[in-house]
Image (cartoon, rainbow over all chains, first blue to last red; front, side):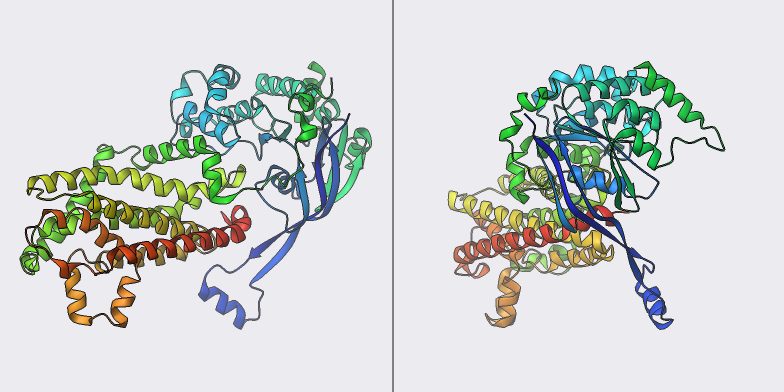
Length: 261
Length: 298
């Protein structure tokens, strides 16, 4: 039995760039015959299908449209043309860290975030201890998250997201913040998510963890699907495997972490 | 093993759907719990790090009330012969304050929640709607003050019809201000000037309704011609008359029929219909424009 989980068909997303913000500047630009605004295609005819339970590594250079694609899949944005369809409940993080309210305490933010992700009050009550234990922010739980360190902030967001009983999980550069023990915990948890049959959408620049975590790689190349298929090949396509001029410390750590799981 | 989640959630029966699908304002019924949390959060946030906290929602209207009362009731002319002028004024102020609060905070609602709007899939209509409910919550202390004032002046003939009128006034403002808040919240994201324009108009509202002066003054000056029609075309003016019917009129000894239009109720219900149509229109505008909201929230 297999069910399609995500269908992206010819999805296009265009952003407009405005150069002149005020009326006065717009007039000046008009007189000088300069361009007032411009647009660029963040995503240009992206199509792919994902089966339930697949884990996809989404890769690509900065600005290739990864986050935009995630926003379309998670429903934050709509495509300008084409369609994006998903099946079931979606959870996850976009651009590390969920939408938290600075003045609210960690506890209040957990409830708020869980509700946005579609959890009921009872469900959150039941899972609260697990969420708190996973985030491990200690006595900061009842202080406003505005005072949190960036690592704690990210931990709390990730912790809520992974406890949602979802069908599709989106993870955008989860390992960018967070210290080593937490990264390890995250990867282990994502492995569990993957094994439970949840569709995993994992964005990362780290070839090591993508290799470990994913069974298919999609590479975006200036808004188009540059490569879609086998993991090893995908990493080769991006030239993330070759010898670098500068040895990447992060990469070594990542390899090491990946082999720990 | 692979299909564990799929089997548990019976995914074969779950349809593929665009992840951003929402049913607009109706989503508020489906996601009552989230809406409740949002309202509670905003009540807390509005007075975060303030010493007086909720007391501000008493202090502000009280100070405003005394200012208006001093100017219009005492300096200009002892309430223009209106009995219990203070209640005439304050009853109107409750609704006007509710209206302006809802529209201004609704206009800002998407911007002030941009952290969530940019990163999570929420039915975005909930933000202006929550602003409306928060403002409604803050009218409770004012209603308490109003009731106490009525009792203090000797509430000679409170009646159920009057309370029904006041309720209709509230419903009118709820629908009208939600419609405006909904539309303006997106406009304000597209163009930040909009918040300032709204602020300017909101400053006019207290003067454009019959609370600092009796309704009679309008009919005396302008008759029931075009200007009267325009004046009464403002749902807030109609709502103010309705709440005055409920609170002020029931405290007076004189009958004051000239202080209300003859067709107060008909006007009220027609206006409610108009506001509901406006709300549907606002929802349509919102749905068309909200797609661009996350990318413009910078």
